[in-house]
Image (tube, rainbow, N blue to C red):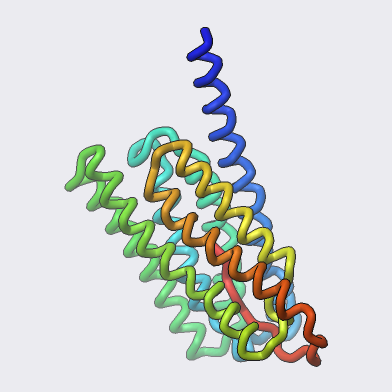
Length: 235
């Protein structure tokens, strides 16, 4: 009875960490909404880049596949958050393509088709050529590769804060949500004994701590006059 109670508590903590990670991740997925409101209002993508959203969409699709029982049983909360992220980023990309000029429109459309083609190949290869648990390893390593590529955004923001000595482009609550999302999914990965979840989110947790530390330090400096907003993506 005692062991069953301990197991139930362990499972409850695991699920709680995953649900909390989902909630804070949704906040991150919603963070670019003000930028895309501006894009829609001006009917122009200006100097903004849509590439971070392409990379984030690919990462969400790979992790959606990774979290499904056919690849990794027992981590369905990874699939749920990734499906929500894929939906948000797909909408952002469609808006970008709709409002962009011809050259970036064609480029983004080509990249979007490339993402879906690559994801289809990953699904087919993992199904046809791999059996469990090799399938989990194959998709898991791809997931880490795509997630590492998304770390460019927080690194870019941190570098910009240091360069400008301003936290204009790093809102506190966004940085806090980034930290909490990675922290809870790091805990979720540890509870599930899954390094493909724990390791990249452990790195993300560290980057979140760095961002919060930079905010605490540079928020003491006088705010500079606002310039063009920076289009960023958090995964």
